[in-house]
Length: 120
Image 1: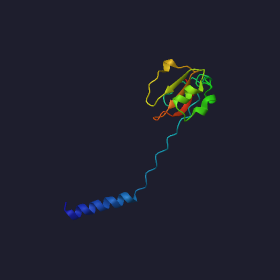
Image 2 (image 1 turned 180 degrees about the vertical axis):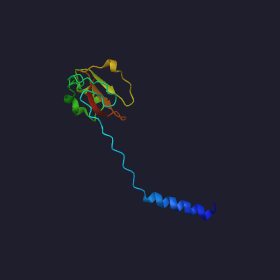
Image 3 (image 1 turned 45 degrees about the vertical axis):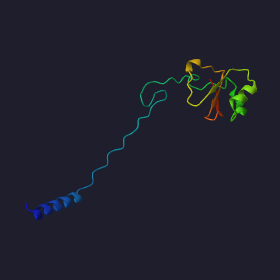
Image 4 (image 1 turned 90 degrees about the vertical axis):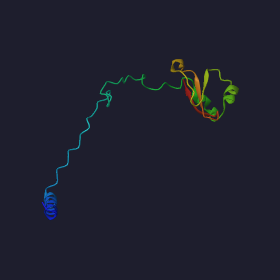
């Protein structure tokens, strides 16, 4: 085939393709409704027993020591708290095996200032 014949055949093919009807769009997939108590990713049952999955209430009375927010460990010591306390430093490692819901955790930033207070 010569160059002109190839070009003509290509143009004729393009014109015919342009006249063809548009393909029908693919149907949108329908997301199945997952009943409560079933993990939508794994399909495995989830325990929905009340109380077991909720966070514990303020058992250590952390709300009572919120005034120490922004203070240092020295302020915690000076407060004379009678319940157990723990200072958690950035990048510090602490074991969940030692969890005590009556202990007050004081989370500090890199300057030693308290940025969060929680139970555990």
